[in-house]
Length: 317
Length: 294
Image 1 (cartoon, chains in turn green, orange):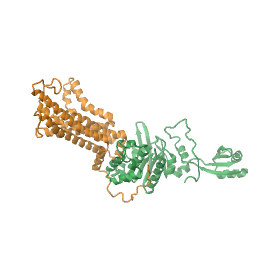
Image 2 (cartoon, helix red, strand yellow):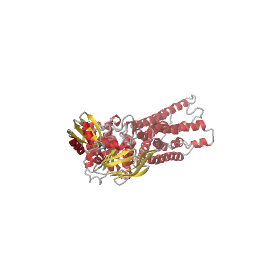
Image 3 (cartoon, chains in turn red, purple):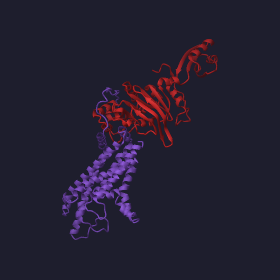
Image 4 (cartoon, chains in turn brown, cyan):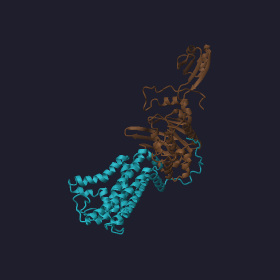
């Protein structure tokens, strides 16, 4: 369990984290989602005490992280990639970390096995690819068999197999009743892994809710309609609150009225409709909508609300 | 690379009761593992030992040939700065065990700066401080390890130097016994001197968080500043040469000196002054590290 209260962090006159409060509960994967520079990493660094909050406080399992007698057994953290001495081997790095808590060598071998580092464990970390660096970071995080796991952008640099492994790991840890706090700027990743989302933008919390609620609460109702006479159908629907795009000569996307109203209008007008698909807003869209005004480094030549892919309802598991 | 998808399978209830937790002894052990698992530190330590003993052998040889020159009625050899009166060769001989210090301190200072500053350079410091979030024990442990290793290397090098120098000096009857006045102290304090150099340097490295800057600052303090003070600005005011005695290396030299110089600090005073530098820098580095973000 992670509890943050009124957490502020200023660097000079720049506010990185602007008075956020949140709770991360055990037993589920909580995603920490936000654009780059939104304050995710700073928040995670404050949780493990690398950065001192300018105001407010954050506790892990009821205490400040530094107050725990066995910090590595409370929290396993993967912060920025590569927090290792480049000349030391992965095995020796793990050994040095384990030694601080008297964690036995057998556990070092376990986490090497678990993260698939076996073949490279005796090699110097300096030669590691980003993906292997991430795996080593996760091995360190798992050393203390911690109750709370914090992973900052864990899928960065991982191959598809590694990404899937992280998903599986995060879900497995949560299923064991642990607290899993996972940051990413990738919505698709969160949609796959997280149960609950904390969305942050410009140092403020924009949303803190279950993934399903965030998707449901955002985005307007849209329906895909296939008909031979699109213009007549639109006329029958009337103008108020209805917008539409003609995707193909016989394919319309209608925003505003629900599928039932569209079907009724079609029936009234005797227009043949042979597809009527309600579209669910994707997490990506919901996220874009949430953070549109909160993006710190926006690229102006690209439209921010770049068309998100539509996910037909039901195809999300 | 093969991927294992297993998750740790520890029973949640059993994990609280058993042993693993932080302790200073364990942090010390971790720091010891760190020192011994980076090849460059091990190489640097070995070179320090070799260079110090080698220098002592050369110094003994130089003394031996100088003495031979005197004995044969030739022109007096040039020992020390030009124009100085010829020193007593017996005294010089008894200084040979610690004669490697001049170069040894350069290597030890670099080592101490590198040990801490490279953690910032590589990002290792974040791993260190997440494992030991109170920070002070981690830094203290690192200082204890580097001081202990430097002490052992220094004292061992001085003792080896003594052993190596005796047969060379014996050719001209310049050899001496371990039991002679101040010899044991000089050998042991070669270690003390290097340990204090290490702590001062690590303090500088911790405050600057930068390898190059740390090494330059340490070399400046140990080598350049004394030269500037003695050779360039000592004429400006009477108190300057007086104050120069309190520079860390000038004071520390008294730790290993076998002949008490006129007006210099005593062995104890010199040791205390150098130790004060070490303690002040250590405390400053602990306080700053505790406050600043990593």
